[in-house]
Length: 453
Image (cartoon, rainbow, N blue to C red):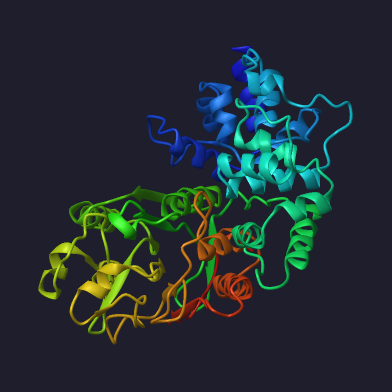
């Protein structure tokens, strides 16, 4: 009971929306829509502290440690362990990797911590070992070390040594993973990466608990909670497999839940699964007038219509598309009774399906307008790139370039959705030297602030 009390006390630093997101993530039984913040914290305190804290973002863990008068520096794994022990959990057994961790008296440089995290996130352990052992001649790297441990070893080198060891495409991958420009000489790019690591990360600001989103303007007044359905299809066959949709959906779901929105997230659906998820979601919209649909995966355009592809999509011909794929226009019609509709399509990657189908193109989606001439006010359709163009798939283990920019811009309070998308467009365009420029079609007449005013 004492441990649960301490866990609940630590969780008190999170917003109600963040607690609701954790309840949904761990699929706790019961109805939580009207639960108080204390109720949510108490329910979550029943979980194993290590598992619970591992699901919380690093900056929020730091806030919890500060509130408990505990050191807040270090890698996320260290913060999780520190919080779990402080809340009464037994220290985890120290593995060979943990025993090899540096035990310095002074705190680690925050810039080195950030750089190590992005190295471990963007590169496989094998590549990190290659950089350390083969390129830098480091003989201390041990077989039992994780990718993060190797990354921490790398960032202890003098900057110029690490800069020489990384190839230009390595540095470009690291910058792209953070949505930063990737054009220029290696020395300039590496300097930009170090400058990013040295910046003080912005502290996430939780939305006021009284509302999740505010829409103002004609026909849209008062407080509104948005319902979202997210689909990420990644495991396509052969050369059409993708790197990022699963992580994109998980991370976007966490951000939206943290902002207080209701989210239904799904991965690797076949044709029947996609259609059932969308039907069931549409049936549950009777109590909301604001909806968001997000799809990350493959899509194709055929004779002016756009289709989203399930993971079991094969060599279908045009007449089979209604059965084998999902029509974007049909999805928009399913939400026609809601006053505010957002459709985000990160589905403009090159694929071989379009090249094998007569009359189709493998070069992204086409332009979309709201399906009906009447009642179309309040619709916003977003593309990862311009119609007919191809979007970047991104580095394995990271977010796609477009969704990474969206994740960075969406949680900022005081931004209208148009301001969010402008920030996304600039970030993606800068990172690709103008080769990928996100696109929108809008008939909005009011303002929506995703993270509140």
